[in-house]
Length: 101
Image (tube, rainbow, N blue to C red; front, side, top):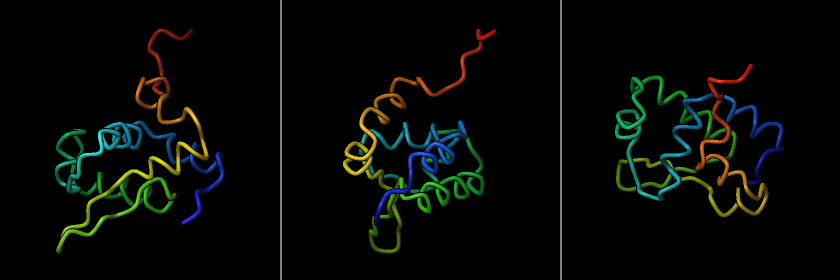
């Protein structure tokens, strides 16, 4: 699956909840949607909505494990297409600052 344009990636990552999900997935651990929802403090239905947005944008893929579908970050593809983007997310550089005037 090809990655979308940088504009589309930024549009999808323009939501703090989706950035929090991507930041969580950076550690490479496999988690269910319910586990992700709990760790980013979102209702399950809201988290599912955001996971779908990330999947449709090509930022994640789903790994099947029996009946489970586990979201996985397309880390290598993202690093190759958008060098430094995941480092910015990891460092929280895309989050708004409270002291901007």
